[in-house]
Image (cartoon, rainbow, N blue to C red; front, side, top):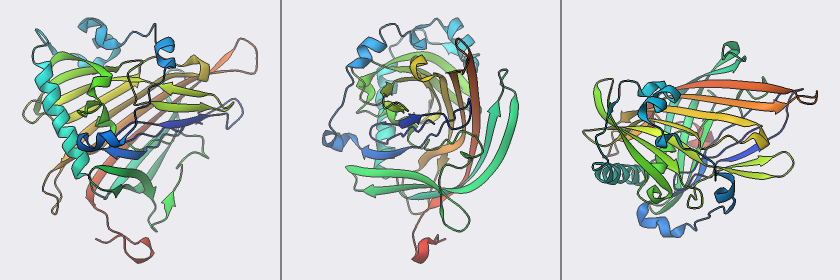
Length: 336
């Protein structure tokens, strides 16, 4: 099974891959860990993986593709008005990074209603089985403004913690998307390359469309996957962000693997997050939090018969409503 974790200050998704059913595996994603604002970033020791330079030597980030080729890989980009040059990129990154840093500083304990559709797919990406889950989704911060642990988890209607919802039924468990904007924080921008692709109308908003790709040898934000045989593989990411032209907030973000990892059977890991503005009564600054998330994972695993493979495909959709402050009372009841 696959268990990534995603940090606020650094992304260190952690994963374990092992068979859980005959000829099947499934993935779990969860995010928790360390938050550091740009002011407190020196509290974190950077950890670069020297293996990245070797593993990703032939990686071809899609931000290097011509726009026509990029549209084929990411259909959501159809209709983008291409940027004439990159002159606006430094200002875009500076203002976006400032917003992400501000989000880190003002993150508070939150709870929301979450509705999840978990699906197993066939080789044509058609739904084979699915189930619905409803829970309370929590984002809990421990620490101060400069350094904090941020934990994301689920509770049922009785206030009891829910672990790995759907795992026993053979579904992928995914969570922890509130902190995915990390790649654009001012502290970590130097670890990625960026490209101003162009402008696009997204709903009622005019947006800047910016692609990024982590740089092997420089990146300290990793998704770490531990194989069932004890091996450890660090995954680097690439992605696309849609930034509101009026306020430079990330309103949508897609991430993909920088390169497949056939040694652990992982071919595709795509996450598409749509953010929404949340204004809490007792928090001066609005928070931009996930409203809808789509996660897609594809494995290609060796079959018992030599030379044969089994494809495992999963898709989850998450919807979040009614974000509010979370406070703990006696017996872990929620204070309204």
